[in-house]
Length: 309
Image 1: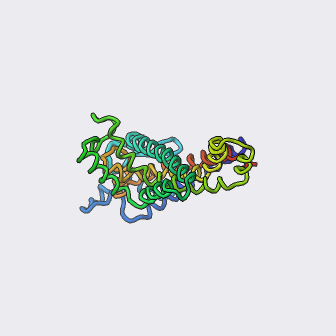
Image 2: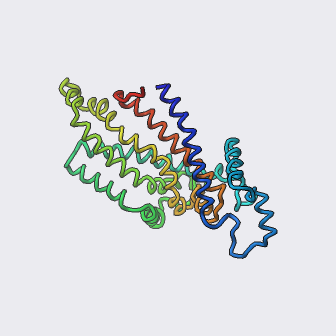
Image 3: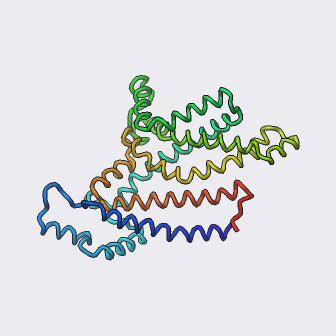
């Protein structure tokens, strides 16, 4: 196991640099730039701006300069947000998105697994049909529809919850209920469907039949044998889901006015703010790589048949 962990950690380094390199050059191939304006800037002023940010240098020089800064954990200055570095912008907004995404994925994992297990143990019964109907709705209805509907019902009509804000406002933790309920819906639906199919397959496996033949109680068979084997597809899904739910919080943050990374992400793309876009790519890449690394380790813990030799 330790040798596998070391190999996986070493493989992260070239993967990370390939992502950074491709992103750096692809962004600069896009039309326009961070200093493009409808009103043309005088050539002298443009030359001074380009020299200030070293954008008058050859592209390879810019690339190696940027890589050197990244290795020093410096993501550079923002080209459009004056007096702000990328580290400052991401440091202020990203924890909010991380917190929202983590809570939403945790709720989706808990409810999705519970619904999937209940559905699998009651296959072709009313519980199964009801659970899968909810799962289909969660997959089919987009977030920008679920969010406003929840806001209309629980905030405007029933007045139980605030329409917008974050936990540092007067409403406190009530502000996270609707954003979490909105953001977790598609992930809850996928986890419910995955867990149902996986558990049904495990229930038909030989080792479960053997466990039942030995006279073990049904709850012991379910808890010790079925759930452990049935969780493998869900663990696989959680890797990309963790990074996806943070990126996917963009619409939810806009709907509920949450001070996360969503607004910065949209504005940096529209403004061609190269350094901010690169900073977000780097952070998202690191999250995805780390999540997949954890998934690989959990595989061995959940299924002893998997070997890392």
